[in-house]
Image 1: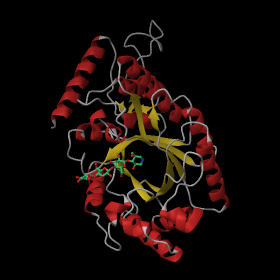
Image 2 (image 1 turned 60 degrees about the vertical axis):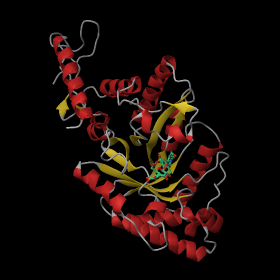
Image 3 (image 1 turned 90 degrees about the vertical axis):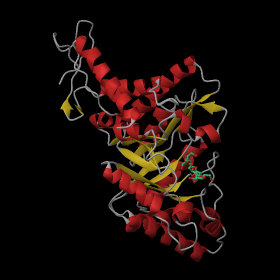
Image 4 (image 1 turned 180 degrees about the horizontal axis):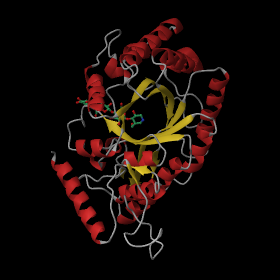
Length: 372
Ligand code: G3I
């Protein structure tokens, strides 16, 4: 048993002891099971060869039910050379998930980043069409019936709502999107097919462009099932998230928060961490309040291993665990919210309601109570 796991169990038993003496029955439930108790499918995170055996293993297995491969399922890893497919790492991730009773969101098939030079160099429409079809058939076909969803196309828009420059858009125009979705549907009819994008968290030309694209795809009967809003947020710029999730849901598609983190402008202070707490609760509530929102996926566990550290060094502390894998206030805010909202629902397989051992439905102070 990893050191982390023993620490978590120690905390659990201490918390249980504390609450028992206060007359509460405390049910330790994972974020995933509490999210399910709130009628959602999952609370998820990322996994890959760097974290599968790492010290985050206990938290990942203990708290989350859905996993997104952080980098090993991307084009440059799966097909670095034309016609040469490498599935060792991606297979290892799939087997880790299956061995631990977890689900996978495949990430990602067609993206302007992590594209090998041989793809970037293509200028012929027929050639690129064949290459896209072949890649999707191989990657999606390999995990057919084993993944919950695929991010079929990722980050197609610029901030002004125009299409991002990529070999796909340069050579095929907008048509690369229906091509990718139709090919993915044929390759695995059961997988939920997502378009995934960032900065859909506030009103503006980018989310408008996304909504217009969805309407065009729906008019062409393109087999798209859902919109992934990455939700890489900056603390202090979070308030519009619930409203924009509702707008995305107005398309009639499923939606999901697919890569959640809330970065804090350095220096990171207790006051800023306190603000972050409220912001994590706001985003979580934003998903809970939208029936079409199927779940939330984080983009990392410990602040120490976040992509933010290298990519955006002026920011820090974006996640729910600190560099020593201690739960932050952000975790407590999400945990508390899921518990409160989940009252009366199935949680961790047990019927849960908040009761004081001795007292009516609501305790002396109108306090909610927890009992099995
Ligand atoms: O594993 C190799 C290692 O062997 C090698 O020594 C090292 C140096 O080159 O690279 C390591 O691979 C890196 C990998 O992260 C693991 O750290 C890749 O070069 C690097 O490109 C990869 O970065 C990923 C990035 O996407 C690009 O794929 C990040 O982990 C990942 O967090 C980031 O995630 C993206 C989402 O896919 C899309 N949305 C934004 C998000 C953040 O940028």
